Length: 431
Image (cartoon, rainbow, N blue to C red):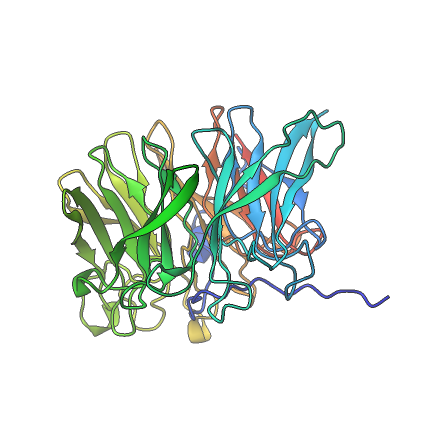
């Protein structure tokens, strides 16, 4: 039998065509090892193909400490390199056991979940599939996964998948991006699509539960207000007043923006909060190309990341972390430094969101590049910015998603490539 060759990480959404590295200067100037002395890095599961491949999104934790996530590839071979999976990791007898909750088939259920899953108000899982621009596997879906109604005594107990909405790629949107879904207090679902809408530049959508079914409506089509630009790849989040916040990655001549959507009796109104600039053309050094969702802290401040950043004419693609305070003021918190390299092949960008703990510390991941830099996990703590993990081919490479925290201060996430099984890993960092 011919052995199936699984592809390296890729997605049908726009990838940043930039040279990347992972906190190289920090590792040299601070003498950091692969894992800081006070931290322990553990691989909870290594993917190999049939169980999933390329976990690009971060993970979601439930109250019992179970870990949920998606793989972009692997599972059913109905699609090129596999249609993707949803998985659960359970802590048992001192170890972790992976259960594949669902394998996408590339039919009416679409394929390739690019975002993570959200635990809804009913305790079940909600997420999106990417589909593809050509519609071969559809233009993406919003789906729900429910556990079996009966007690299952098997190790592997597939959940029931229901498609709540299938995008057409037209006015209703198409190809949801990397952002997780969010719920309002009434149980309605909100998210973004990278394509479709009135101007084919992406949408913010709502899926509402009504009359025993689900109905999709577009709250906003991008380029209705050109200043907020186009192509939202991250999701949206609610602030305390019920407004939605998100980012756009930019159009061909633009560099991304932070936007706010405010509800009114006549609909939702978009406003520009911050437009990013091309730092090589004399713009302010605030970074460019935000791909991830924003994060809200307990005080109402917002945090986000960009793929490109500092005003370095030789190696601009370094990435930033930024903050927007409750007054709406924008500030770049950190430019990730680099060691000058020929053609900048070792530079890095931040593709996922940051997480905030109860003390206000920030955590996130940096993507790496195949020419020797594999990514890492960083922290902004009381002593400043530091690297917790510098990935290698043995520990997993190229993290796309963010970091999840449990009540004990443990960190969880994914690396989309390599690892012992060759298809990426789910990892834990313990203090």
